[in-house]
Length: 239
Image (cartoon, rainbow, N blue to C red):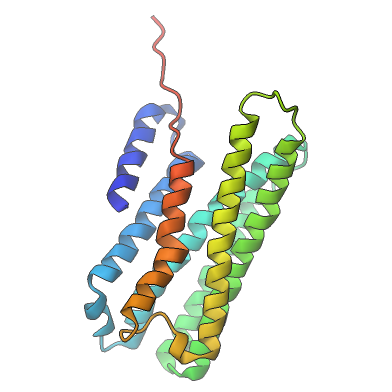
């Protein structure tokens, strides 16, 4: 997956280098970082859990999840901007809101890591799980709200509109995929907060750990990237 993401990013850059770092390019780059980080964690699974410093293990396990959240809320941002522009509504607050929400999430996570570093206990573990569950729920709501709005708006277009059906399938598929993966993550983390046996980040549960991240990160990423596989049009040289 990381290699294919890197190839896709290079192909996009080759097709449209004059546009700089577009949302599409940043999205692919962040997907590459998430999948590469998760691959490293799984590749050195036993080494990660052998760290004597508990907080270091927690950071390595949880950072990819934070980047995954930022990556896919970037897609929600892109949809929100399209929707508000199409409705002739102001868009000046959308991008700052995206950065504020992500900054708040990272700051709160740093506070939780600090609490876990000072005293890793059942209480701090529950707080960390509930926090990640709440963050995932926010992402799920974002996809339901703006994916749903964009889908309904596209349905208002005339049936003969060029590319209408293709865009409907694209928006509908990605909305269902992303909403489902974040909702599953929300439920799984909420359960693990109440029941330590259900904690997916445990050395004694490597298969459960693999299944969880395959369902909530790897497979959704692959499906979304397949849906968004179309490259920008080729440049035409004017002689």
